[in-house]
Amino acid sequence: MAYARRTVFDSPLLGWHQVQLDGAHPAWSDDYRVAGFSLLLPVDLSFECRIGDGAFVCDPASALWLSPDHGYRLRRPWARQRSTLLTLVEDPGFVGRSPLPLGLQADLGRWACAVAARTMEALHVEEGLARWIDTLRSIADDGAQHQQRFHRAVERAREHIAADPSRGDTLTDIARAASCSAFHLARRFRQQTGQSLHGFRTQLRMTAALDRLRQGEQDLSALAADLGYASHSHFTGVFRRNFGRTPGQLRTNLAAPVHT
Image 1 (tube, one colour):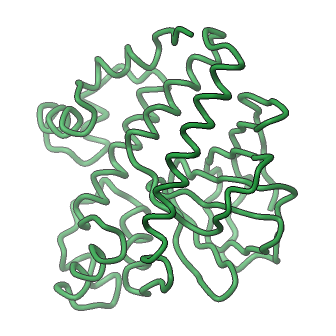
Image 2 (cartoon, one colour; image 1 turned 180 degrees about the horizontal axis):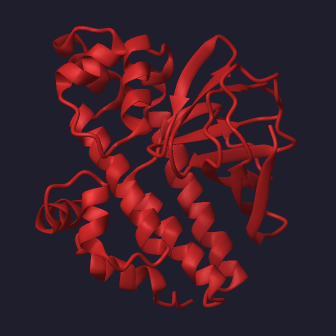
Image 3 (spheres, helix red, strand yellow; image 1 turned 180 degrees about the vertical axis):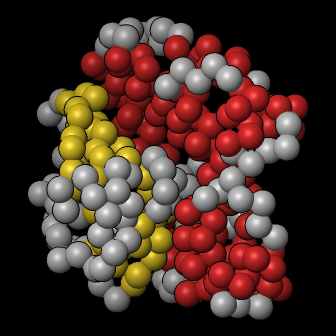
């Protein structure tokens, strides 16, 4: 699959890149192998991934760990889909999907702004990312038992929500898209992901909000509407509960220098 790559930061220890696919690919791709250990973080939308016998959905609430020892295939990535790619020298010891908490996403956005503004020294970037990856690796270990089998309805639900998190789908709507009983889906989704369907959709909306704020979004009312919130105040309340500050405050924080 053809894609464009822009390097954010590069060192002998790790690389940090932004990648964007050139076009959509509805069928399963050929078998790929990364040249080195990698961590792929979707910024928007979703796609399916197959590693071995397991097929699962990757979305902005997840991290995909890849190893040169394991081939992988992709299906249904969207045209111009964006992801963050971290290339690693050391083997993280994990392959597959793991959760990506909102707090870690906010850290990465703030550091990206600092690197672009040249207010964060290389050593600080390396240490920050090393701690960040260690934390994410521990989360992957904690959630490994949930990834032994991928429930088909749960993966369908993830894909449906990630396709457009701004939709005000009900549990019935999502269950219909997943071809599953509503109550069964709600129970299995929480068991496998550790969060509710509503919590998952909120995380995707907040991830999209972070992305827009990092790019300098000024119209917060329009942003709230784009994300599916009925009012600016509703959006601000949800945002504050998740990040401890308002969208305007976090936008300022994303642009502020990071001191060593």
